[in-house]
Image 1: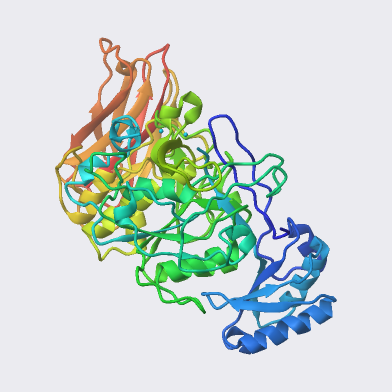
Image 2: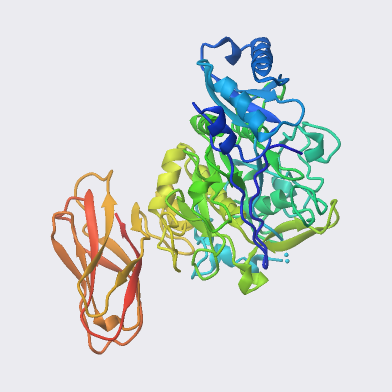
Length: 591
């Protein structure tokens, strides 16, 4: 294969790898600049034409244009097919060097009728394998860093919602089978597909193993059964006296296969996104199981291309929420796509202590965090889900612990399914806002930024459905939170953390809930104050020489009915005695 390959870390208990750079969308560049930007030789290009151009709708015109541009660049180009977004997939013929590819790209960029042209890149799964049942699913229920899922089940179990898992396909497993509906195999290259053909209606996973020296890897790898692990986290059958529980266990899973041996191409993933969300892909039957949620536990390096963004935007405009992995390179998520695309929910991973997992990407592109596991402290600290025991081809069904942002992402996809089932009118934007506003501060540390905090399924589902109570508790209302850490100096000046509240009408409630999460070695030293947008102060905690306990992790109630709700609220904390220090981990306001 000489497709522009993009490596993504496969996170196991003992190994990590770093993504190679991926070429950005190449628009308005010179051949020299294009050559520098192309990370590897490519076999295909994705070309988007401006509306009104004949090539935008006519395959014959697109083919003629490819031939003409190939002649100018001294290469043999061939229009291959139309993608679901309307873009043209152009084959570059014999293997070309990066410079040759750049020359072709420059020809397209010189055409004013071309909106964008990008190499057809490869994405890969983001996790790696290891065993059974609900008591081991700390990620769902543990008080420290679980996602508080059980409390949501009294309100919603995901009924009526289909989640498309764009991944390696699905290998039969009795703990998921009842929730599987029709999907599709979008892998067009038989060498990557491994199942002996190209695209077809059977999304079964034949295995994605590869030998040493293949897939640009010095060592070989067993089949991951990655899509089946993801599917089990979202919607494993529950209350059936076996295996694991799914987060949205009455939702349906549509396996949409786009990742095979060595990963998957952008063009196949683009069509998978389009089809899964109800769009039309030329030559592919209409989707009868349109998904309102798409899970993409996949990614690669570089900028979000215009081609991929077009597919995502189309899906969101059709009402489908797109949830993606932040990546496993311990880098800023801005370097990973589709994590850095617009209109997606980008998910970072946390471990069992509630801290950002050591491998997880971070930064301003991250929207939310969810349990992804941290197996360097033991396999049981990974995420347990459905799998298969086959090293290469399918064998007996099994369960295993994996870790990765691939495992965190289906936690959020499952939560979205619960939300859509509870309130079918929610838009993707409303869903993202509700998840962020009802998150809780990260129980552990996060350097670099982990979004709005750790997702809280109970509070989020209750907020969008207008209910309260249920196992696991939770407070009705909209939650505004900050998970930005602030150090508290010893016996020093006061520090502040801010929350901007908007979209509220009238004044704040007479029982405004102020949730505080502070780490401190002697909490009696602390004076804590809530500051309203107009500067009015509300004392929450006084200092005490007799309170030698550590930390402040509680909720205060304030009568703030005289204050306008909208504006910037501040939590002010001061250490008034010597010898101890601390940190504001996060705080929240519940209206």
